[in-house]
Length: 304
Length: 307
Image (cartoon, rainbow over all chains, first blue to last red; front, side, top):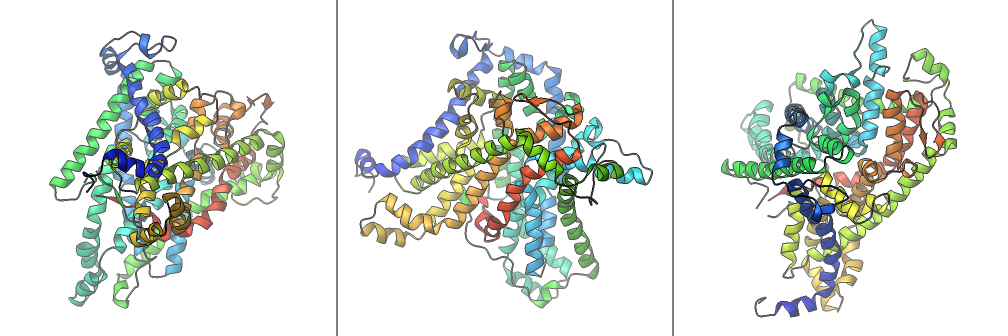
């Protein structure tokens, strides 16, 4: 049907629809696709006063410089360590809490718990870090309480050795509650008759959990794991930027803050653009790869 | 590549039959302890912040730092802070940015999402263009260069235009629009209503809950953003509230505090002042939250991305 009608006529008939889409399309082209062209500076020795066109072309030199920069590798190392800690400590947390919340029989308590645990998601990182400092900083509630019983707590907020644990703890505090929403929806989707049939057959509470509830969560868990993998090089930019200076770049630099401090602040535009480009490509490849893998294992992926 | 969002209203909880709650006693006890701990871990820090903001100098000295229960509550910290002008100005900047930004975002997102819900040739590639941005995000450096080339540095437009449309919000809205029963739309079309009329009189009224949630997301992100202000606004006198919180609380705490913003000096900050700023920056969110929170449970946000 559509092929018989000329594209021109179809567009003219639907010009209102096209006009509605156009501003948004321009937005995405200008702020998402135009910057991609800006990555040309990763192959130049970009000098702001010369501009994109006149800055000298240097091929892959920036990538070589980046790979021989020890602070870049420190940032990669910190990023991957934090990502791994997030995967182990943060990722399972919403699943556990969702299982507990889902099993609540009282709607009132359930609502109350949900209202409370969703809230931190909406609080800014600036505030979250302030709250943690209030609690764990040198004169914070925790330090004072422990000093009262004769324990000297190190200033957790400024301890390079604890930094990675701290940022993961902050993430757990902020996002665990909100993260339960998607698992709660999946739990509601499990057919209640399965439980009934299992109970009639004499399956214990544990067996119902193991054979019905947990399998019901596998799909969504794999999906979120894929999405998480794509984020493995982006470990909380705003969050870490706020606290990096408390512990110094050695312990606190991650890839995104490396790009900010060496590029925007330090003026190494080209080298950091190269780092950003690599990071973006690796992230996309990770998502696509994880998606492939999930499908090979018989799970529906994100890309259909 | 398609992203299907589940926007059907989900019930708050499933009906419980007696045999369902036969978990072992130990499990039930563990559950109560766990939930109490989780709720306390969320609530206590907020209480401590509010309490400290009302604490008098005496309370602070007695406690040696932060306070859980102020014995002589005072509004002094708030008075000093709001008289000083820096926080008041930043508060106005943030309110303005959040209001204008949310309006702009809602108009842009709704219009594009509605347009993309039509089956017109040429729109599928546009949808793909949007989805691809979720896979490959341009980094800080090229985004900064684009904003600079557009002469947006040091303007509030730089805090709104580059983040006008969130691809995820767009997809959620489009999905919701597409699930509106076709018969309703067709009957309006037969009566001679054009796309805009249908949008205004049918689609928008039916989408109120999902619109409310998306608006909340935008408002919260404008209110909470600080990095774009750090990146794009050189003049700290024009900073929004989150940047001032960072300056007072996070930077003040480690450098001893005194500094100046736009020529006005900051009082030598102590805990009540810092916590009062934190409270001021948090209250709008906490006030807005109960009104919109009920929509989360109504399942709008199951927002499950699946293919």
